Length: 335
Length: 167
Image (tube, rainbow over the protein chains, first blue to last red):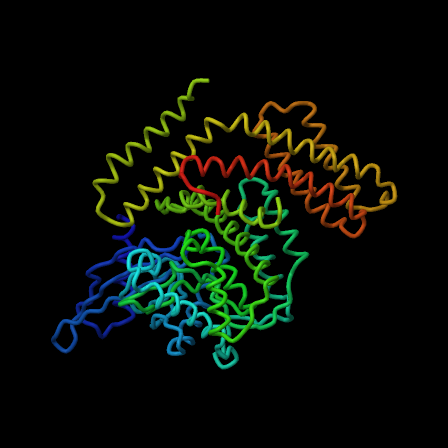
């Protein structure tokens, strides 16, 4: 809690400097949210005097971690995408400002609205009567995201792929690098999976904005409807089937495929997007999804061991998941 | 064999966290951290108990696979000028010689053999267009058998403690 106190003091000083017109400004509450394993998320409430009356505001800080499982870190793309996508039919929190000066709070961050709601994962399991509508929303939002005119969004921080295999090549190279950079011991299973991926890259039939981390824990729901898509840190421009592969992999990890079969999800996506999903591409992106999450797990383990942050959730999560994440794609490839 | 003392200590730590600390925590962040510490300790405790025997088995499996690859590569005289083949033969001869000499630590041997296996997987991939298809397929099968053995061991640790099933 010492760290949160320190954060509170730094934030208060930062806000006073940023909003000098706000008299008697103070951070009355700050809490680190137990969500995600990469970006640090803080919910804070600030109050101040305005024209003689007290005003207050609750906002969310998304800050790059000191050490994290998804290197290299750059907060700018997700901030830019959230800003551009807001109001497009994809529900996202409104972002307020981006702070790249690490002197402010220690690392770059952005500030966004707090959205009231519960995670989709818990809503799925607890509010069974809402499942049908929520799954419809979930697929509909993905179809909408993939249909956005990326040229019109004018995203300066993301590069469009140079050719139909470029995005997959870039992804393989990225996660291969992450493994090489963060592994504590050689990873022969991953080496075999990566060799297979490199030899089986499918050409992308479309190039769209891809969320990069599309799964039920990255959504907020309220009154039976999805109200926000969160965690855009792996957003990119690429093959939209990558999002489907990541979703399918995560459904297996979260055991949600037990009640929402992959085939139903794909059929709904095809109906809502009007695009037939290539099965070979989907298979490739599912294997890549397992490799990607394994790489994140290996990096997460290193980050947790090297960080001064006392959060041990990553060690637990990855210790449990890493064997399973490699076992599943190996079985899919017949070994 | 008696349960190792380290296993007992780790299990006790986990129990203390589960029975003493977790019930008294009110914050979600603190609760999740405590829960994960307990899970880590349970998994590590199992590893302590089973590690040595399993690593020996894995080393044997990798040794066999790498030996097969080495034997076949040596016989591929048509590739005598191939740099990847030469490099791979050199690496495998070095690693397998170390195994024959018997390094003092089974963990160290496991680490080294896994490194050689990665090198072999990448080497075979680079030789895909040079080796006969059947030969390559047979070698890949050998390598994949060794990988499966390792996966079965690591998955069993998680499944036995977490009561889960493979993904």
